[in-house]
Length: 301
Image (cartoon, rainbow, N blue to C red; front, side, top):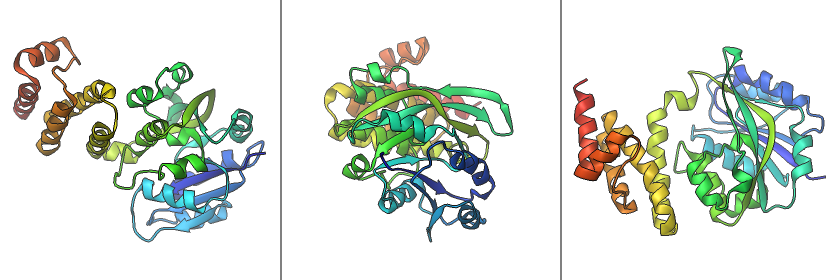
């Protein structure tokens, strides 16, 4: 049987871990390893994780999830890895289900997730599914358009090590980038059409509190893609850059907007088709003029 580890990056996660470990300890086939990386928490995350039975790697400087996940990859002895966010839940059949799907170390997996509101778990705020992944003719195109979440995946250690793990130069967008680089480097990702993860939304999550940074960090990824990817992907990359640029100018982040404008030009974007107005405006006056319009309109609201 294949060895599977659950690896959990943690930052001030003490209040969440007990809920997660209910699912971990209830696995019908247990994980071979349970390892937490503590990213210099200021609460008692380490004590709670140890009490619940995890091995803990202590960080001495807060460096973000990419750094922590890479240290966890280095620490595990298992052939297969599941990363799990400390504030989410896991189904007791997770290991059993995935054991049936493992083909070889070149094929990675993503399952489905229900997204619930943490303060009232009877409220479903959406589901994350990958129904069309297995039929996608071009998985690179697919992951440029669809977010791959590492907390819903199972990855071979071989695959992760071969691409250098997560990018440590970005503080956000590391999950989507991981899947883009996996398929860019010849690995296949398959969808497992089962709900095995529950994501719990709350206003204190990193993405909620740092949304502007999350969008800014995408620029580093897009810049690399425009340098290393075939030109047939530029249209898709440019489409997402165009939307990011509009977001920056709308929110008066001119520095990021100016950088995006450079990348939009490199991608060859001639129009922004998020609405009939944006399409007509950019076709007549250009993308730069549209961004300036957004900047001055929202400055005066």
